[in-house]
Image (cartoon, rainbow, N blue to C red; front, side):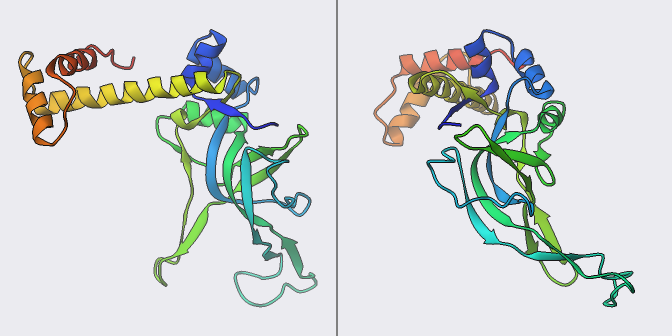
Length: 242
């Protein structure tokens, strides 16, 4: 896979001329690849050691080798230090990496994210990293552990994914993607203004002048009261999420 631009579900739906529910359905059924920006530790398998990272082969994601611990299995009985009689000591290589970048989600994980109201932990789920030759390698997200003391022992934390974190590869030019991101940021700012308007209990009339005066006291030369009034009206006119 070449270096990609990624778009949120609203931008992707607009790009394809379909509804957001169609995009979700395609992602959950595996008809459309869904991605997330990962910053987490992952584990590969004995058969799938990752090659040294290079931008030429993996332009959308990078990783750092953390080494390969060997985990003993079938060697101890009931948690004691005695080897099980008649069994050989088995050591399984468990290569681990610190990964940052865009990874492809499984349809099952996408379905889990889109059908839950709270973010979903990536721990234990597999994700795919795509190379330029259209091949991919699956790795397991394992998170990181922190030792908090004898009583608490180890606590594992891992990146969580909400529905708004899921992205899709975009075929639009970068300028168009940037415009969509700017529009998304503007919408977020208007929502914040709407919330502050309610919290401050601003009057329906005359509030623009007071805001302009406060801005001047803070050392800002603008915007003027007319612009402020228009922004407040636009924020108050926002439709709530249905």
